[in-house]
Length: 193
Image 1 (cartoon, rainbow, N blue to C red):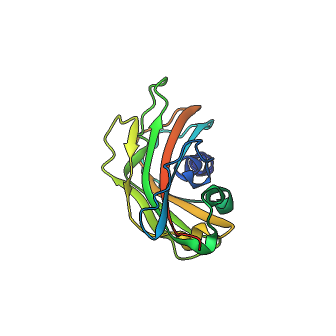
Image 2: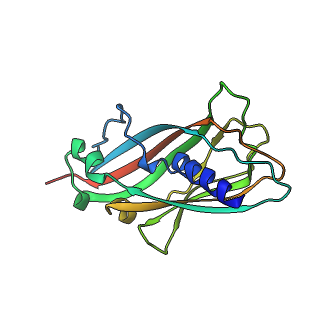
């Protein structure tokens, strides 16, 4: 049974791990008022989870890691700088919404959710987002952001995102629930000379 939950939650990581989503067609125009270029890059990803999470009489800890290509060159090329010019990459915003066409809520996740990034195969995870106090019957949650630089992870070809939470007692998630994740991160780079 835990194996089924793990498979479902791996898919949920893809929702939370919005780092691997496609870039939106509109980005914040780069700020060039200083010696640096600052670009906010937003993402939106919709994901339907086909498996259900059954209601269990106990809370199960979940620690799931997903690895993906960062596509760093694809994101920075339009702004005229390279990986070597990047000063920092920091999260700005993360929000998860359940499709309003269903009665599903976020009740299957317990009170605290954390999102970490790390290098591929790394052992130094960095907390970038969390939420403590997910209200019952919520269909949307705005994650609290840690202003931490994950440039070293972002500049690699691959990086990992890990989702940590406990399941909530006696709460289930219906099959075919659609999640929409909105995420934004900020790249600060030196102006090319």
